[in-house]
Image (cartoon, rainbow, N blue to C red; front, side, top):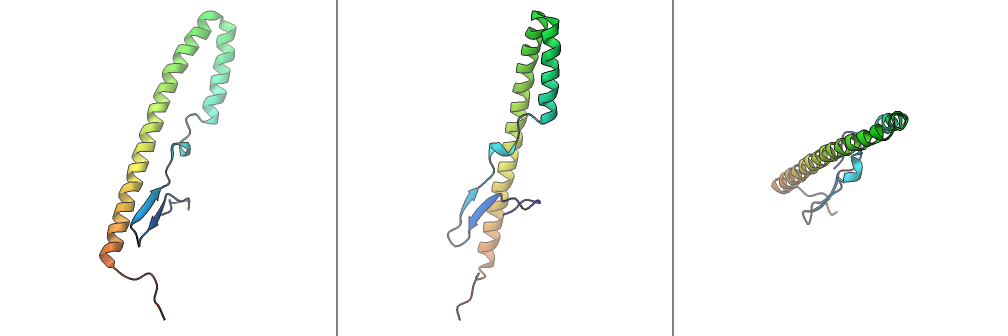
Amino acid sequence: MLDGTGRPLALVNFSTQQYVNLVGRRQFELFGAIEIFAFAALLIGAGLGGTTGLVALAGGAAVYSAAKWAIREERYRSTWESVQAEIHRTIAHRSDNRSPTWHKS
């Protein structure tokens, strides 16, 4: 099974009805490049602001990171479940058809 860009999402063996879901957490980045550069700019600014600025940045970064992690986990779980459902639909549809995948001559 492939996604819209041609990237594989699952491998299915129809004869044994076994499958492997290839969706993984590594496919969902935690921080993008823009966020990394923005954090670096905030870190420089907080460093210029002294200890209070660094403490505020550390607290804010922890909360932001936790929220981003929760969002990434939800996206992963949702995508994984969608792929699982599509795998089961595909296997069920294939089993209902019972059409051979090859013909002996």
